[in-house]
Length: 387
Image (tube, rainbow, N blue to C red; front, side, top):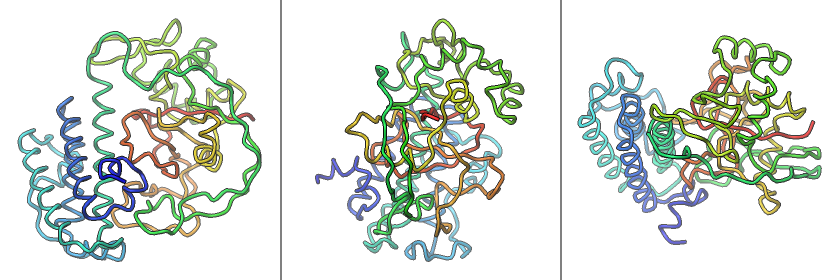
């Protein structure tokens, strides 16, 4: 595989060598700076600051970086090059000035690449460098997601490709290995470890629910009818005063979304986004369907592409609360840690898949993200299964 192809390959990214990581870290930094240049707001500057902070905290200042997962996370660290970094990280005080932040980003990347040059070419030696790549890709995704909600464009709102509605897919009952195997490389903590599951037969949408299908829900009074909502979901929709997803000014009669102070029309065939899980659950209740379970979503994503299963337009809500797989243990530097309120609160759910702004190397069918059920600030959508 060529270096250029490897930069976009999810498997290669998780097993990246020093040479590939050196190229990838520069690539993701260029991507982040380009995204920052598109929309240089205070919120964007704070997101970009997270990338420099991560490299400083886990690589440059971390004297046990070479020990990888075996490191002592409480061990003393070297002094930081930017005295305001902790304040920026926690959103305290003013956002960093653009020039100040760009200088720190350049300094942190240079120090990271110098240390990478002498790092052991092993899973332990490269653990934090691989995580830094995944983390910065995530920061770039967040920046582009933010820019897409605020930049003015003309005509139709930018977003996932409009897709013709296709029939749901049927998947037969089978055994499935849920999660990732112990095969070396970077395995995110949320995917540890693979375990056998019996998955009964199920029918699942071939693609995420579109704006056209969400319009039908709204036109039928979906946002005004308590019978479609869970108790916490109904409390949320009333407290928010919602009659449409976040950033949507109109659903009935065509979808109009707010972009940079102007209203743009969203294509009816685009995957609906900006939805919290309460909204996804309400639509399913109205349609007489349900959200897929994690095993169902993962099995379909891994096995049903040839049958027409399409994912990657929006991150997708699945059923159930955020929870660890058997054998899970915290991983130093994890970018998707389990919420501290677990277990049992049900305050966080799971997103699967990828969005339009996710880098190709981060589009892994085993990937899991843990976010609050009320999160509607991301490119979140859903698909459904037959009851």
